[in-house]
Image 1 (spheres, rainbow, N blue to C red):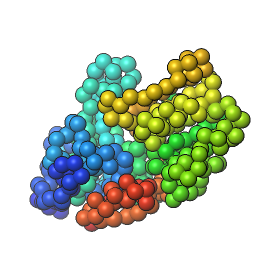
Image 2 (cartoon, rainbow, N blue to C red; image 1 turned 90 degrees about the horizontal axis):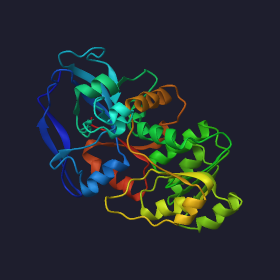
Image 3 (cartoon, rainbow, N blue to C red; image 1 turned 180 degrees about the vertical axis):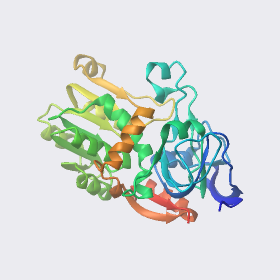
Length: 346
């Protein structure tokens, strides 16, 4: 039975959150109401906690990686019914705008968002139900299935940079959850060597467990000469930046070989400036990629990777905490003491 009220985590201001009792929404046409069984913390949640969200003014119920049970469906919903275990992507493209018509749905001008998973119930918009709602197979836990949303972004970016068999890869900002997914995809693609560079021994140990051949804690040692030795002074074929700092963006370009490829994945605030050696980029024929979000096709690929067991997503979930401890969970993310925390509403 669905209750009238539920607990939900509301962002009131920068670094100010409160658990409130709010009305449980009712599904309209095409919508689905899900009882949240697990919601997973991520770097985007940390950014929202620290500085808000430009598209959603407070008070704002946040969280967007989740899985749970359908408890009610709106008129016109097909293929889904109460009792089904499901997870979903955070947004769906419209399919009609300039970018969607060019196969760039991740840049859609009319994205429908699905925030609100740090709560006991989450209402899924009709467009996401239609395109990006997935039935969880019995062998997957709720927490594992919830990793589909961040993996969508990684699948999209990995397709752009396209690691080839035998290539040497550097992952900067290693140990964060998305970097750990990049490491696994690079291994699946046949990378000959994966060098993980990060700041946390705890997180780097997980990076090594999930496929990194060499780990470098750049907080303790100078990474540049070590990388030069490992790459025979040429730099790596592919450098993937996941740290989300201007220094990391610049360092990524400095560590790629001539003719190599750099993926700037970690987003920077608007107005941030990055300094590059133009001659190195130009005469070295270095290709620079940026990536944001993912398409419906990427979402289906991500769910298949998890469902088929090709990726280890369980290892990314290092802690479980109740909804009441969401702020402590986010602080664990900030300090590097957790990779991902599964928030369990009940």
